[in-house]
Image 1 (cartoon, helix red, strand yellow):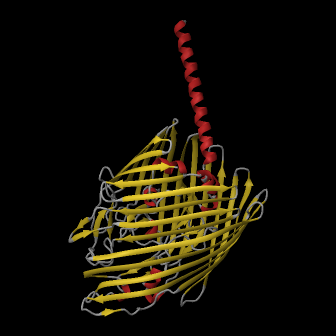
Image 2 (tube, rainbow, N blue to C red):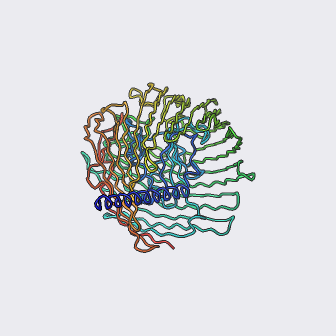
Image 3 (cartoon, rainbow, N blue to C red):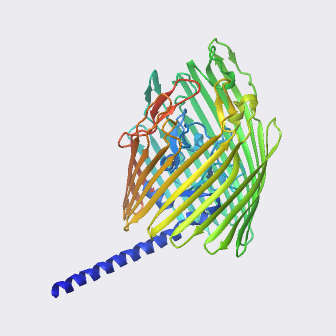
Length: 635
């Protein structure tokens, strides 16, 4: 009898403790959700999203944008011919893709020349960033008038919430170092500012290839300033990046010398009107400068329009400046059943070719500006988007945008973007799906290297779906499927050495995601994605990851294991890879912390290949083995 009473008492105590722990977890979860700014900024109409919250970034101790993107589902992040870390669709080579757009708050900062953000921003420091939202968003209506497959939104910290200063110093076992300072100040109820200054040098390990070594070292300087006064927001940013050429355009993949110097300076002003801030006006300007220089006695194949295999260019140097003027206005209307958004965009891009010097192998040297280059581009758009609450747990989404655009020397064109979708949230199940009919515009870079300097926009139909199931208050699982059909794909024609509108493409990708909070201190996240691309592709066609976030009082630990499947690009045969990264942060005092981070601990990074229609193919590991220590002080 006493034994039964004792066991019953133990059972009651255990149940009470379990209930108490569950209640604590639920309360902590509720507090985190209420303080999570991404819950205020995320936009369901933009598509399926993957979010790094403030807590995620803190535990990860992610230094740069590359640290965040290297494991996201359904994409690869690989260094291209210049050592620039760029997203790529599974199966596609790491090139200069036009499918991705990057935003810092309200400012789109992708390259004006290539429509790719990573030349300048792949190593952007994240010390001023609160959270990151990644939208799988082909056909999104209300974000920009230049359609993109993926939109990356980096939201900066709110100075009213921070109201502090922080200094970070980082050093690795090679010669890399970072010095970073962030100042966030709330002046009064209507006025605040956020400032960041960063200086970083990256000393990557030089890689041996068949006939020499290649380097992707870089150095960058970054300044950022945001100022809020009432309903006005003023923001400006400056970043200068110096890169070694890595393999560049060298025919033998080993440039004798070279550099890529890039500068981006932008500013914008946003003004909200009306008591509910439902009317928004934004005006912006972006100035970019790029100088590219490469020298190689074996020859280089840029610019393609001048390439002659019997007398190749051995020295090429050019400098270009770019300007982008932007303006948009949008108004939100809310009723019991509808959330209507009306808006208009205007964008004007210009380009100037300041300097050209090239030398042929026979000694001929020229400073003449050759051929055609895109001097300007104009795009005007009007759009309407609505979320209709058909039932309490079912919303229907529809949007249309009309774009009127014109490239220099060409006739203006009009294209219609159409999108329809639904979102349903039940007690434990949520469903989201979209159908989009959209397009991708060629970049300045593509047009200048195209046959007759003409390319038709790539037409794209996309069908996507997502189903999620929340099996507990702290855990869920989701499955996403995406189907793409593209016409007029941009391809390189080997017979004429020009870019053309080529084959149609059918692409499918699927992703399974599992996330579970384990007790008070741990969160486990698993992902696996796969495609229809096969293993003879130019990058891995399936992969996944395991992430473990641990946050215990003064200690934060982040474990990340990234898997990429074996693949066989042309003449190479790459095995499966396991990229293991570890970060440990310990708070020595309330205002002082130390971090140790190790990347590619197993030395089993995914490998990438420079596969060109022209030039020697080479292969190299995508990520170095690196060990870093950081010290952070808050004032």
